[in-house]
Structure formats: structure tokens, C-alpha cells
Amino acid sequence: MFENRESPGERDRLAPDVASDRSDGHIDVNSRHSAENGRPTDQVEGEKGGTQYGSGQNEDPFHWSLTQGTTVGRALISAAQRLGETSSEAARLDAQVLLAHVLKQSRSWLFAHHEFELSNEDCRRYADMITRRRRREPVAYLLGRKEFYGLEFAVDQRVLIPRPETELLVDLVLAQISDRRGRPVVVADVGTGSGAIAITVAVHAPEAKVYGIDISQDALDVAEENRKRLTPEAGPLLLEGDLLDPLPEPADVIVANLPYIADEEYSGLQSDVRDYEPRVALKAGVEGLDLIERLLEQLPTKVQPRGAVLLEISPRQGEIVQKMAQELRPKPSYVGLRRDYSGQVRMVTLEF
Ligand SMILES: C[S@@+](CC[C@H](N)C(=O)[O-])C[C@H]1O[C@@H](n2cnc3c(N)ncnc32)[C@H](O)[C@@H]1O
Image (cartoon, helix red, strand yellow):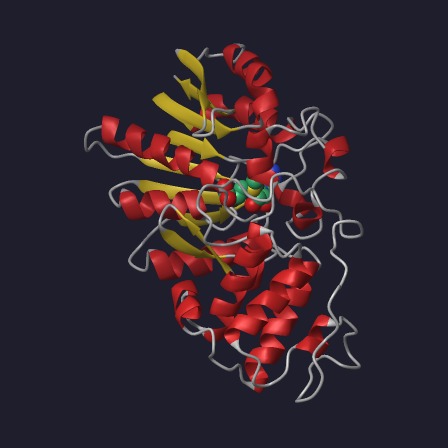
């Protein structure tokens, strides 16, 4: 997908969210499964007897191994076997996170209740989740949620799953707001998706006026759901449209995590990403720079004097985006690159 496919930072952004509660962002970094060749084969025949699930409709043998009365301990071993090697930490973690979700318990509860017996309905729901995960559906979509900056965001296939490294963008926006020492601040989050950046900023800086813009109405529907739950009093104003076009006033801080995958990189993405996350959230033309380039062109009329612009980029795009920013007129007073917490060049910062 990228000219540097092994870049850990790139994989961080694009790697599957194997388990929702893994907070370091280093997820399944070497797997790059495809739907065809990454799927483990079933090695264990299903248990016999009891009520069986999935027959007829779904031939996945895993369904046959879950029967009413299966214990938590047995279900975890069986599910982990079907998700990967038994020794695979990722498979075990996925199995635990998904069973905890089905039983509406914590992972630590599972460890203390290995002998607890699953009901018919538990078995059916767990088998369904494991089957979907075997097809590489991201755990965050299976759970319907993803933690970002300590907040829980609803996510589904209409939005990109927020990545841990994007939390740095939020840190930078909040630093910009606090530098303005109580003066009114207008913030625009372009390509807001689930609303992760805009809503988090609104939660942590309620004095700021925040806009969240997206071209996808589907994404904005998810963002609105998150806005109502996380910032019921006010929160960001969500606007549909292309880049900064819908912004009704110049902003003091413009933040954007726009798509940056080049056309030819797209087919090489992990199937977890390519087959499940929205294409409109990932692809950005031949070089992956179409949207960032157009956003830069819009800045002169959309950013306040002394305003700041914070862009998330692919590590390979740092120098070229920096050069594009330096050629803007009026010229920014500062253009710099920032590394993320894993040491990858990840952000371009402009100040006017
Ligand atoms: C990489 S996702 C980022 C989502 C979210 N900000 C995050 O960090 O998790 C990019 C988002 O940009 C949106 N987008 C794509 N093209 C756009 C455009 N021309 N104008 C506005 N938004 C766009 C997509 O719909 C998607 O929600």
C-alpha cells in the first residue's frame, strides 16, 4: 500500500483495531491478513450434543462447538483457537473482549468466572461475533464503540475508527486554545468522521466554538449521535460539505485528519481496513494528497490572522506537505513537522 509498507506508524493508523481495550495503538502490526489468506483454518472439531448454533444458515464449524452450558473458560479457548494460533496474544485478547461484551461483564470478571455457563442466547451471539471477527471485521465495529481520549465514541462502518495517534492532534488544538488565554476561539475540524476530534475538543474546552465538517452525511449522523451523548449541552456544530466550504466564519484553529491513501496503496491495505472502513475516509487520489492540497489552497480566506492549522499526514508526506505549506500566499509565519508518540512524522503545523 505505501512505499514504506513496514512503517510502524503507518500501520498504526491503518492496522486493524484487534482489541478495543488495547491502548498503545500497536495492533496486529505484522499480520496484514487478506480475507482469503489470513483466515485461520479450523483445527478442532466441534463438540457434540446440546443445542447447536448456526447450522444451515452458516457453515462455519465454530458454530457447532458452542452449546448451551459451555463454560466461559472453554468458550475462550475455543474462540481463540479459531481466531488464530492458541499462542496468539491478539486472538486471546479478541476472544476475551468479545465474550465480555456478549456477557456485559468486564474481562477481569471472565477470569474470575471460568466455570460460568453460557446460555443459548450467549452462545448464539458469541459465535456470531467470532465468525465476523474471523472475516476480519474490526473489533471496534463489532462492539459498536471505540475509546478516544478517554471518551467512548459510537462507531460503525459509516465512519473511520479513531486511531490513538490522532489524540496528539487534540493535544495540539487544546494547547492552541489555552495559548489564547480566554480570548474567544473558533475551531474547525475538517473531515470530522465520528466527531472524535471536534467533540473531544468541545468537552475539554467548552468555551471554544467548534465546527465539525464532513462530506459524508452518513458520517455526520454518527457524529451527531456522539455529540448528543457526549456534549448534550452544546458541543460542536456539525456541517455537511466539501472541506472548508461550509465554514461560516474564519477559524482561529483548523484541524484536519483527512484521507491520505494513494490510489495504488489502497488495494494493499489490510482487509480489516480496506473491506470495512469507508473508502471516502481513506482514499485521496493518485498521491494521496488531493484533499490536503485543496485544503491548503482554501486557507487564506478561512483562517484568522495569527491562526493555526494542524494536519495529520502520512509519515512519507511530511516534506512535500511542508513544502506546499511554505509556498502558500500569504506565507505562514511558521511551518513545522511533529512526530507522534511512536516517533513517526505525523503532523504538519502552520501558523499565520
Ligand atoms: C481519515 S477520516 C478522519 C475521521 C476523524 N476525524 C478521525 O480522526 O477519526 C477522514 C474523514 O474525512 C471525510 N472527508 C473525505 N473527503 C472530504 C471532503 N472533501 N470534505 C470534507 N470531509 C471529507 C471522510 O468522510 C472521513 O470522515
